[in-house]
Image 1 (cartoon, helix red, strand yellow):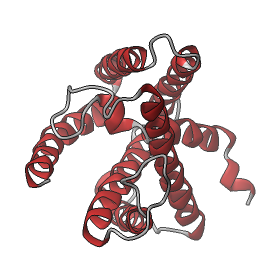
Image 2 (cartoon, one colour):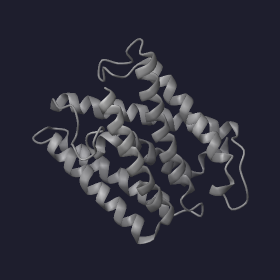
Image 3 (cartoon, one colour):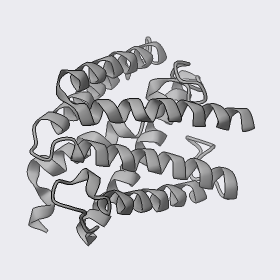
Length: 219
């Protein structure tokens, strides 16, 4: 377990700055980055679900998800803020779930994903809230100074975190149906790219709909 944790940490140290660069930089560089991620993810899903009845449904969903990622980055005045914020929440949820789950263990959350625990779920929520607070208190991300984490944004963070965790469980379910542990081997300590972004591919479409419809402005 220790060697696995070291691999996860080293992989994250390398991958997170790369992802941040492309998200913040934008333009054709971001589009190229997203295209590569999309192709890798689709390939992993294709291999995992080959000859399965849910193969086409997964390919359609991944196409929609990455389209939403593209639109979320390129279609709004907030530039990279929306996309970066959701990514940070999802990564924080994953890290919080991993650390709390490994540390406190306790009752299992679901049989679909045996490693998921209630402590991990709570840890995911806690770290996502902490990360969101740090994000909004940091003026670096905003042209007009730091922001306040309002109640509406707090609820939004919880929803994104919950959907990210649900997405993780859904992908785990399909992995069990396919009788595999990981969707690939491209990322040491994590498995495939889809293993790494399983929560994000569900969270980004939800976030895109929220931003597109200005949903929270009506509350």
